[in-house]
Structures are given as C-alpha cells and as structure tokens.
Image 1 (tube, chains in turn green, orange):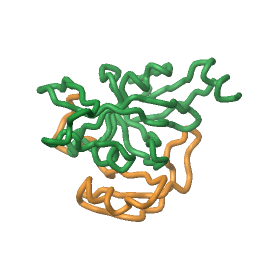
Image 2 (cartoon, chains in turn red, blue; image 1 turned 180 degrees about the vertical axis):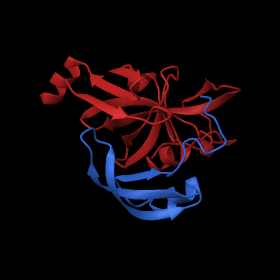
Image 3 (cartoon, rainbow over the protein chains, first blue to last red; image 1 turned 60 degrees about the horizontal axis):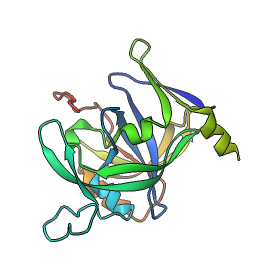
Image 4 (tube, chains in turn red, blue; image 1 turned 90 degrees about the horizontal axis):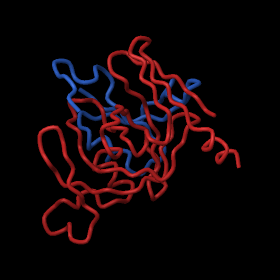
Length: 146
Length: 59
C-alpha cells in the first residue's frame, strides 16, 4: 500500500501529474472536492491532450459526449472524457473520467480532483495538522506490483 | 501576475515538485500553454497566493 502525506498552508492543494490519450503529460495544481463527480481540468489542457475540448462551440457539438454539469451558480455543458492516468508521487490511478471546464483563473487552481479520482483512494484532509493524506487500497498496490 | 511552465528537476518524498527549471513565463493562463505546446512532461502553475489576494474560493 502506498501512502503519502502532503502539507498545505491555507487550502488543501497539491500538484497532480496528468497523462492524456496522446501520451502528453502535464503537472498542474489541484484542489480536492469530493462533491465534484469528475476530475475537472482546463479546456486548453484537454485540447492539447487530444480531446475535443472546445466542442461547446455552436455547430461542433453534434455527436460528442457533452453532459450538463451543475456549477455553483449555473448549469453548463461540458465534454466528458477518460484520462489515461493521474499520478501523485507513487500513487497512480488509471482511466479517470474528467470534464473540460475552465475554473476562473483568479482561483490560481487549474484542476479539481473529484470523485472519479478520489473514490479510488482513501483520502484524509487533516485541517488540524494541515495535511492531505492519500492512500491507495491494497488491491491497487498488488495490481501495480504485478 | 505570471504563469510559469517548468521542468521538475527534483521531487520530495511525496512526489511534489521540490526544484524546478522555469522554461517559459506568461501573464496569461492560455498563452503559457501555447508556449510549451510541443514540450512534454511540463509543470504549469501560477506562483503566489491561491486564490488571488482579495478572492475567496467557492467550489
């Protein structure tokens, strides 16, 4: 079993390494939100990973897997797609469903780690000690070792 | 305000970047991606307060 402890200052933030379907890798700053169904990432990164991230433009969205997504103040249409891998240190989760959506840049955060990633791990946010603790399940560690 | 694109030279025990080499900078979140579009395995972030000073996060 892999276990990592990441200290944080004000918000539980961490860097996550993302691999897209074309093999391209990016490492971006992420917030943790288990209420988010998918992992959320910027459209521009999804585009460079080879997905139709700008498919919400009129005339382009026929036959694409767009789904309505509930935000804090509105409902938007987003492209949903499978990422090849998300990795944080020794912990890797493969085939993670993500959605292309631009969180306002003023957040300073590019990615939201939602349930499609967090449900594969035991995640603890210890606000008293200001630590994020991530552990993969024993079964995943065994699969990784094979 | 600036966004930076870096190669990670060293990681800590939890895989978080500990030392980086900055290869591009931009005041724009999209332009920084365009500058390193041909590069692979790049870390992109905005140094400084998160969220920006004067904002709160409501996700």
